[in-house]
Each structure stands twice: as structure tokens, then as C-alpha cells.
Amino acid sequence: MVDLVNNRGIIWNEHDKGMTFEVVPIPDELKDEAREYREKLLEAVAEVDETLIEKYFENPESITEQEILKALRQATIEMKIVPMLCGASFKNKGVQTMLDYVMELLPSPLDKDNIIGTDPDTNEEVVVRPSDKEPFVALAFKIATDPFVGRLCYIRAYSGVLESGSYVYNTRSGQKERISRVFQMHANKQNQIERLMAGDIGAVVGFKDIKTGDTLCDEKRKVVLESMVFPEPVIGYAIEPKKQADVDRLGMAIAKLIEEDPTLRVHTDQETGQTILRGMGELHLEIIIDRLRREFKVEVNQGAPQVAYKEALTTTVEHKEVYKKQTGGRGKFADIVFEIGPRDDGKEGLLFVNDIVGGVIPKEFIPAVEKGFAQAMANGPLAGYPVDGMKVRLFHGSYHDVDSDSLSFELAARIGFKEAAAKCNPQLLEPIMSVEVLTPDEFTGAVTGDLNRRRGLLKGMDTRGGAQVIKADVPLKELFGYVTDLRTITSGRASATLTFSHYAPVPKNLADKVIEEVKGTVAAK
Image (cartoon, rainbow, N blue to C red):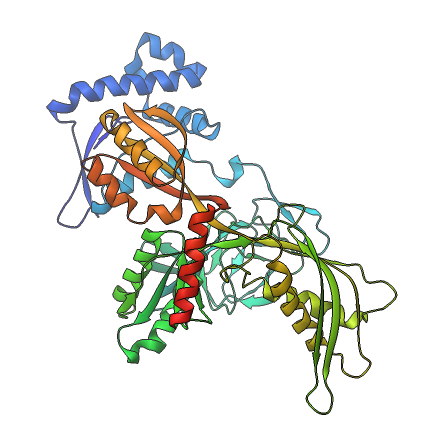
């Protein structure tokens, strides 16, 4: 690799997988190209630093390495320049140089504005300053399992000092956590340190309940930092261990992986009894299954990919549900009248409105009604997929002095949901992926034709570095095996990026087919 800042060549040693490297003069065959690109670098640097313009016009070679780095750092912090480095992570080439330039060019906490957090008790803004003298505040950004020290939590300290053996307050759980040891991480090695200072990144052990995205702080100054937002999983595999003896090991392995990866979910399908592992895409779940085999030595059978459909109510209806049961002795009774339909604000989850007046349903039974509706949303009226969001307005009903209790009203809500939701013109929703394909010109027609065949909606085309960039929204259902198919139609010269975009209604004919398949599967079980 040629480093244009200090005009030298670097060769990484194959025998130790890139752990060591040698600095060498630039080879003769690369000198002309290196000279051309170094001039471009000096020109770009001179444009952002006025003191270098004169030097550039008089004698570009008189610009020193330190002057280049200083100008590059300033331009990078002001977002005027994006530093580019090359390397190959597979062979560990370029890693050391990249880390050196991270240190040289990227901002320290003192170069940036103060972080703004929120007081969990008052919701007021809290200014977090990057200083060792301030109270401690850190963000937990990764949980990992280490074979020697157990569960590791990676944290970034924004202010204050964390001493090993001290306590921190977790604003999510409301509990204090004892940090027994603090480590400075060096790739796969840990160096134990006494304290973590403001601006440092480190790992801690000894905690009981810390999750990715939690804020850890001093109990005397509680603060919540902005956390990461994790999207809902859009695809699932049914998995089972190949050997019955591995059932417990599979459960423990999945629990560890879920703790590390917040976008991974697992649940047991109540109707089929299958364990469903859900994630963000085929590649994500294939890596997880590979890790189960490699790290946890658990071989699994996996089913075909399953799309994480949702259901949505589209119209509002009124419904009266009376739940009555006599079993000889004390019976069960609940009577509710409610309005059910889609939410007005377009948000997810249950919006419950209590419009009961005059005590026709006692106050203590209202939470049970809300709980019944919230639980019922997990199984929609069409095919048992979760309902995206709904609004329920409870406005009338009655009760019995002896036979009514919370459970009766909870069951009335669940049964009422089943009856009423089916009349709300429910729709099946499917995940839509944002697809970006980078392809040579000659394959543009074949790629767009293939995306159209997959029910894709083309959003635009662009050019990047002499290649075409095709953007489209495509239903996830149509994208299984897409990367392999794309390589086939472009002779391996195109690449694709898939990210979750949104949920959209499934066309009626396809929705009917999905519903029939689900009902057929349940009937077969």
C-alpha cells in the first residue's frame, strides 16, 4: 500500500497474517501514479487551509507531513473532507495504518459539542461534559461472552471516572450494578486497568443486568443518553437441534446470542410448537446458525425462511361482548361495549381509551380489559400474525356483584377482539426491503427486469464510478436467494445492499394464498 501523506510504501507480512509490516520506498512501477495522487491530495489540503496555499504554489514538496495531517484533521472535523484508506480485513492488511489515522484525524471528545442527555425523573435536559471531574456517565454499546472472564459489557465513557469495584446506576432497570473489573480491550486480549476515564472505551465485568443501549451513570446525577434504535426482525427460520441431547445447549446458546445481538429474537409458535429464530435477513440468520455450530458446537436443522408478516385493521366497528359462565358455585361474568379500529396517529401498539362514566364497570376492572386487548393483538384475525397497531375505546358495559372479577373482563376483551377485529376489514402487511444494486451498464436491463418480476417498485437510477446504481423497494418474500440470482444474471459483476424499509399491504390474491398456507400448516399439525 502507498501512504500518500508521508510518501512511502507499506508491505504486510503474510506469514503472521498481517500482524507485522515493513515500511519500504515506493516501488518504481507505482511512482508515477503515487506522484499524481499525492499532488491531488496536496491540492485538496491547500484548498481548506489558507496558510498552505502559498506553499503549494511556490513549492508543493515543502509542505511537511505534520502540516498535511493538521489540515486534514481540521477538514475532517468540519466534514469538508472524507479521508479514504485502502486495505483488506480478510488478510488484516491496512488495519494498523487505519488505526493510526483514526488517532491523527478523527475528533477527540474535546473537539465536539457537549452531549445532551435527559433526566429520567423530570425529563429535563442534562448537559454531559467530557471531563474527568464531572459525575460518571457511559453508554453500553455491546454485550459479548468471553470464555475466560464471562460476560463483557463494552462501554463508552462520556464523563467522569469509573473505578474498578465501584457501583453505577442503570437508568433502564433502576438498579445499581457493581463493576468488579475494568478492561482496556486490545483485539482478542484484555488488559485489566484500575479506572476508565472520560472519553475512553473499555469493557466491564461483574454486572447482573446490563443490555445494549443502557445508560450507566452516577446515582447522584441520573441521566439517560440517546440509545440505539433496533428495527423489528423481518425474517424467521424454524430451528431444532439435530440431537435430542442438544436441546438444553441450544437454549443456552440462543440466550447468549440474543444478549449480544438486540436485533435477534426467538419465540415458540404456540400452534405448531416450533422454535422460530427471527433476524434482519437471510445473511444475518445464516451467520447466527454458523456461530451455533462453530462456537457452541450445536448442530441444527433449519426450515425454509419465513416472512414476519403483520396484520392491520382498516375500519372501525362497535361491538358488545358478554362473557358468562356458570360452573356450579361462583360463576364468571363480564359485559363490555367498545369501539375498535386503526389508530389515528399511525403509531404501533395499543391505544386504549377509557370512556366509562358512572361506574358501570368498576375502576379496578379497567386495567384487565386493556391487558386482554393488548395480549389479543399478538394473534390477528386473518392468519394469527401480530396486529400492527389499533385503537380501542371502552365506553359501556355492566358487571355482577358476585361473579365479576378481573379475569372475566380480561377474557371478555380477548374474545371480543377475535369477534370484532374480523369485521374491521383486516389487511395482511409484508416487510418491504430497500434494495440498492450496483451493476455495470450492460446488465441494467436484466437487473431492472428481474426486480420488476419480483414485484419491485423502482425508485430511481444513478451512476457511481462508471457503474449504474438501481434503487427499488421490493417485498422481502420475493428476495429469498436474490444475491445468488443477481450474480448469475450479471456474471458475478453486480452487488446488492438490502435494508428494511417499511411494511405495506399484501395484494389480495397473494394475501389469500398466505392465509391458506398458514391455516393448512396449523391443520396438518
